[in-house]
Length: 338
Image (cartoon, rainbow, N blue to C red; front, side, top):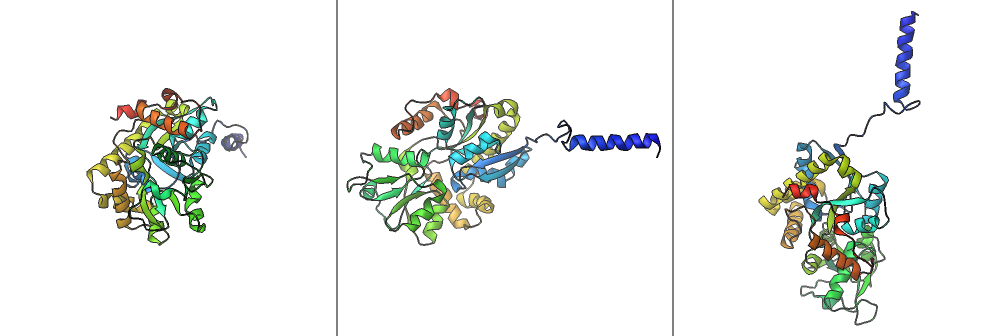
């Protein structure tokens, strides 16, 4: 074999060896940050603008592709962000508050707000057309995981309206020992537990199956609160601001689509993300969320709204001191879109 040919083959072998990572890592493919790993706390019609952005191709228009993973709880979603398996998470902002108290060097921050109130519904095993909070007295309601925003908001609503939490006949027994994604199955299995709180489409599916009835919206009772937000690491906003901005632009376009179209048209767009529900069911859920003002065009998380969150968390005694809005929230990108 000619010397030049041997040298060429040796050079090729060395290059392949380098790029395989055996000797060096310099040839490894760099992460494509236009491919965003997004972890959502759960899969719900409550997050309709996200699915509209996916299904209408608004992310694609921005040069982004979004891979969606269901975390099954805010704590799990935050773990995905911290360990690097997610670039962005959709979760309750309370999780960012908890995490920032740990003093992480690359702390997570909220950079966009998606929903503006509690999106869960009270589901009863009986059809109660005249339901009020009085109906919960002396009964048990499964409200989600302790420390999670669904359970804390329900606790806030109960106490704000003058009721007490406890196991006696004059109190409301609020259970917070059930994982968020197991609420429906645990509630269905326990014949003595009359109530639980569920998001859509789970609430509608339970009702469709004849296992329960939607009797109230906690969003109507809770008022304005930053319920679910987009969060990422501080370093991501610094190093990949372009991608973060394009991400929120796509969400903004989805908000606009929802506001300019009727619920049936929105439901048709949502259908690929909710194969188990009919267009009519999705349309009804959209109407429910529109009625309580779940979505808005403003993606910023205001200091006033954050203060409401702090009051909810203090009431639940999961914090003893309010967090600083400026340390938890970065509205730099969202403000540009207003």
